Image (cartoon, rainbow, N blue to C red):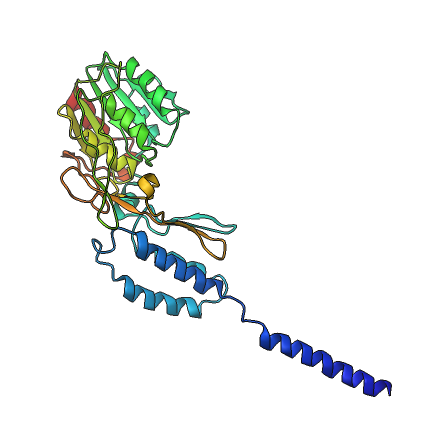
Length: 341
């Protein structure tokens, strides 16, 4: 009798278990869900698919197949490759527990990464350069009375007041070098503040558009109220690592008559994720918990050419390589100093 009861007990348990398997929906496939949300987000908001001649529908077919075949962490590489198809330095994702991932770095950025060194720059000054703005700005005066300001980023909130103090100390120089090589970009309000110290009348901002071609309107650049503008000769040093805000500041300052761009073409990171004017955002938390950032607008130079990929070319091209830096020479800085003497 005990054996019979045990037998039927097992049968009942198996039936219950099987019924649960049958009536329960299959577990969600988060890889596919992540892929679908990523593809659709890009399709909805990314403004440069046509400009870059990207066949986004064909990419869907290719990467959905790869996603279906991915096992475990293999999908992370599929996602990286999918995002890399945009070839955009503002595209990134955050993988749970693995930090920030930038799938694409522009060729100019890679070329110039080791072709600049603050340590070499300092050799051209007899006295130590000073630090300001949470050490994001370095400045000084050469023996020829030429001012020098290096701006590492515009993403420092203290840059507004700090830059005024720096420039005020250099107002009596006979010329000024603004170095934005390797500048990583940042806040537009900081760029506006810097530009305001070099203009005497209003100038328009660069055109920015969303995917639908609608202009994003901003107020024009204005001279800084109550501040004396710097109107003596200015050289702006640029290279392929100056990106985003570094691209923007280069093209804005070159519109000023007393400014000359020297060095090499900027990185060309000209697509941005902005929240102004009710723009549809491209930043998403995916079903798996990963986070993606997709730009929803693109910027244009004053000549109407997109900043993305094209960057901003110099007025005077001075080639500089890692070998020059290793030899202790900054050819771009040398040219700027000699030009302003």
